[in-house]
Image 1 (tube, rainbow, N blue to C red):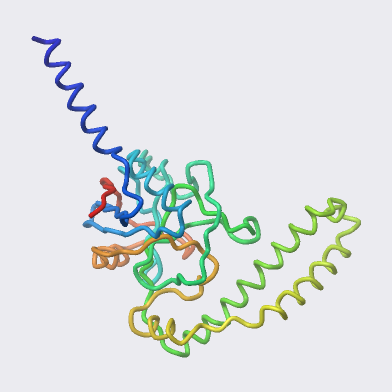
Image 2 (image 1 turned 90 degrees about the vertical axis):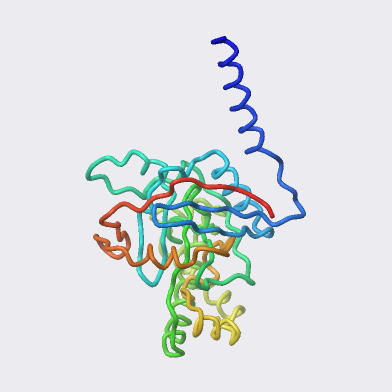
Length: 276
């Protein structure tokens, strides 16, 4: 009888796993419900960012996010989580520096922008990550804010500054990869000269970035964070539970603006991948 019960339990577990790993229909949208300690947030994943889509699906199906903290919450900006080590909840430890030990190649597409409710990557800065690869397990819900034209003009300036800085580091890396001797201290001045010339030529060819009017209208009415446009991978958007994201964005935090650790834990309870 005991062996029979054990066999039944095993069959139930196997059946559950089989259902969980049921192949997804490539012709249907994929949704993920992220059950959090403050409510459920459901996102639809974009098909044209397949590397990020597949990575997120895999992590959710493997229960990687169960128990993970939202370690960084910035009001009027983002709710960020995905550090697997945050499950440990060790007293006094500030989580957020671990991303599973890998990155996902950037899939930055021009038709996506940082309106309120998008699902986007987290990544290291352009000075150390000019490829703009995404931090493997980490993700953000965009909360953002409604902006005035004056604020959008300032965001436009910031976008161009960010692009200039990124191109500087990208060009510098490419030149060194093409000629390793440029990395030598004796050639520092030559390297800077070559970077500057190529940077100016590139910026002249590109021209200044201008936020399109249709996007300005979204930022004026729905909100978001336009200064990130063109520099992060956006791979989905919230379809249900944006009010939960708003609620999470209002929790009390501590630490410098770059960190913004919630004073009281906010975490992922579980995730569910599904299709309609």
